Image (cartoon, rainbow, N blue to C red; front, top):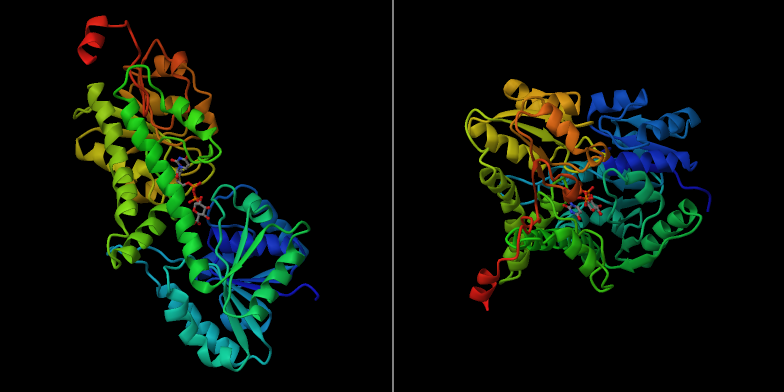
Length: 454
Ligand code: UGA
């Protein structure tokens, strides 16, 4: 089998990364998106979001002439054997998943395959609620599938923003969900060409493939809400530190150390959305949504814990100025979707507190939301200038290097809340320092209180 030609429909962070890496590996690749502006800037080697190394790789893919971009699905289908569908499946206000883009793209793909002679493999990578493929996608293509002109396979994606290229090049797993052997084999062959050292592949049915993706993200969300719940307990115990507890329990191989970092709660375009999608689906089944709802409730309450720390510091008052360090939902991205900083800033503004913010990547996106309501500071020190309290909300590497001095030099009153647990509390003894999941310092052992307990 020679290298198959590829088309990718939907150029978000999964679709664009896949397109660029396919092209740099020598596969002829066509990227499709219905956003003309996006396509025009991609043709000029510019992506509309930040992902480490992506722009450089995009430039070399364009120079190699292995990649092209279009808004025309027909053109893409005509010139490719495998089509990846990577359109978004956002959350509706009702809490259900919006499958509009899947529906529209499926219809256009159907029309395009109709007027093509050769066989087409449609690989759905978008995250879908259980049964979507069987109830919504397959019926669209039923006749073409029965006539042997095409097949649909599911191939969920586990890329993380900020690590998209690395995760694509070194995935821990490939999942292929298929209703027949031929289509699954075709996709597996493509992956055997794509990877020199093939990762583990799980071949399964469509329903399991859909649920693997939801279960994966829901489990990650569960780990985070679990450790955040432990963090909240730590804050009531003098001397207790959630980082030490996470480190200890993470050494148990049955638990594992990853995704046990306490913080302001999980955000981003995936974990909150997929958890909500799973809740909506399992609510239709008796009692199956209880655990997922608890995970969501814990996450929704996490920003309040930060406000509580401000209240303890007596700084949650009208007229005060708060400096926020970090707006992106995590480091190494400019993405502010479902980021906790939006919730915190809205809350502070509502209470008449003035807000100044800093972020190495996400300020422009934040400005689109908050406009002139807050002040945007290019440097950390100007963000801290004369403020009453600083809250660290994203774990950017430059914030990890901060020392006590910068706060003491610039702030009106040096009060710091480390909501990401990136600073060593022992090095912040001369200022008022609080952190999520950190009990107050033990000043002296109070024997009479101990006796009361026993
Ligand atoms: C997540 C999954 O990790 C990917 O495997 C998946 O492919 C992707 O969703 C998706 O469905 O497309 P991503 O949204 O990029 O990836 O972000 P994560 O790295 O998972 O972080 C999500 C949130 O959890 C962030 O706000 C992060 O700060 C927070 N988090 C993560 C914690 O608070 N503690 C942790 O220990 C880990």
